[in-house]
Length: 155
Image (cartoon, rainbow, N blue to C red):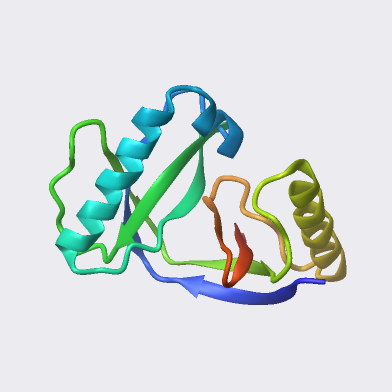
């Protein structure tokens, strides 16, 4: 069972590389791995240049009914960063997120996806006054030490 909380993220600006056609983790990595590794490395270098810890998260940005999967770095909205070639940015408002943390869940398998979806569905069923923001970004982050965390935007 996941640990579940509501977490507010402040207004921020996102810097990311999006790869056309990638709407999830598998699609992101299936094409040219060197290109993806290069863009993730560039974001890591950008984070170091900005003096922030590079806690890279994968984000699904949803615009106009389409999902756009990317590795991202988010900074305070007043922090100006020069865009690297091929990099995009967008402003994100302050927003509440449903945070689902799974200590013992492997990163991105269909079983992982199903487990996350079941837990979120159950939480929303128990909290009918809360709805997912279908247009907001969905974050996920995994590491061996802390496990897998998903943030779903709340309307």
